Amino acid sequence: MFAEIITNEPIQKISEDWDLLNEAVLASFSTFRTVGENIYGIRRRFVEAESGVIDPKKGAMGRHYEIGPTGVVEHTKKPFEIYVTTAGTPHHVEHNFGYWHINDMDELYLRFPGPTPETLGYSVVVQGKPKGNECDRFAWYCERCVTLLFERVCETGRLGFNTFWKAERQAVTEYNQAIANRTCPECEHVNPRGYCWATNKDSPEECQARLLW
Amino acid sequence: MPAQPAISEPILNYCLGLLPDGEKQSYFGAWRDLGQYWVWSAAGMPDDARLKVREKTSKGIVELNAPGNLMHSIAAGVQHQVAHVFGYWLESDSDRIWIQIARPDGFLYAMIWGGGSGAHLQERLLWLCPKCGEPLGERSLSRARPSIEVFLSQQLAAVRKFNSESAERTCRACRFIHPEAYGFDPENDAVVEKLARQEW
Image 1 (spheres, chains in turn yellow, green):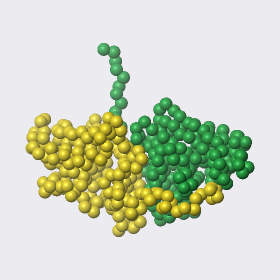
Image 2: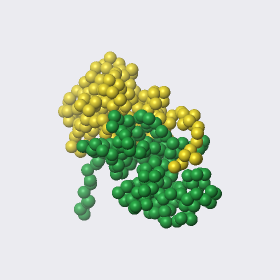
Image 3: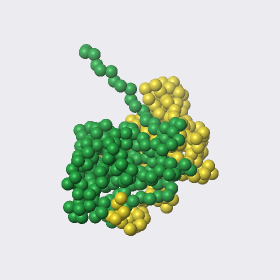
Image 4: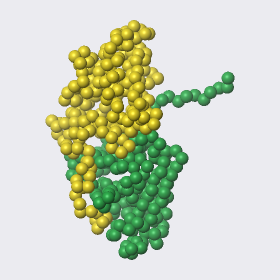
């Protein structure tokens, strides 16, 4: 109905990033990138109804864990499903990042397969851009009794989200530095090491830890 | 010590299938409040009219016409309209994400609103002359707390007010009469709104 007032200019000339799934654009979202009030991560992964999400580098990573009042709960992500981990919920994705992330912002996930079973699908995560006193936390809980072992805070609202990755590396390094950090004061269980989100940051020990949890 | 009210269990997560289980036909979902995000989804068969985003840019109005998958971000404050979904130009205090997923039997659509804290509190509904682009009318909506129900009720009242004002729907520049508007929920469409939804 607006045919007479719609511009003839191709959309690509008006906005290069008009389609975030375009291959040329998508590469800039392989970690996280802020657009407006949201932070986006868009990865190409195999997305299957049965086995969940398979990353070409990290392997199967469909198991998503959260900690609530009853302890650890598991959710297997399904294609075509919008899943939101609410602000304040400690969450961990197996083989993807080796800590419990606690975000002051809600995190929204959507996965959908590629056009054929052989092609990569899309794994999208969106979270609000933190402001003011809103933070990101990296935490470790005992895998046996869920006692909080270690935590570091990144003031992403005050310092900007670009401080996240450096803070993540620092938190993982500090946690892994002393076995006492990984030893539960309640049940004395020695927990596995932590590891970062990016596989290229893994030390040999962290690479082993990624296989464990 | 007086009895304290019970503290409710924390909500850890929300989960929403874009297409309800067993749903195979065309589908027009309801809005869902998923915390800081409001989410809506729909499915269209190959013969159904495509749901297309129109957006006001510095270079004029564009219509997104992607043949396959699409994920498009609309910043807070940018006027936009989605054909057959809501019959007005919308400007809001929160970002929007429009997603179109191509499937062998048609398209899945999702609209995600929000992200930052303190959003979903105000919007502006506008109508432009489809022939010359002249602004015809507008309504401002606001609420003290985020509420989808309040928003849906406010936008439908604004639509009906616009539809009842034939002078407002007549373009002062070119005299074209804007067709009736329609709200978000087809279930609540009056007869004229249902026809308008099919048209634009």
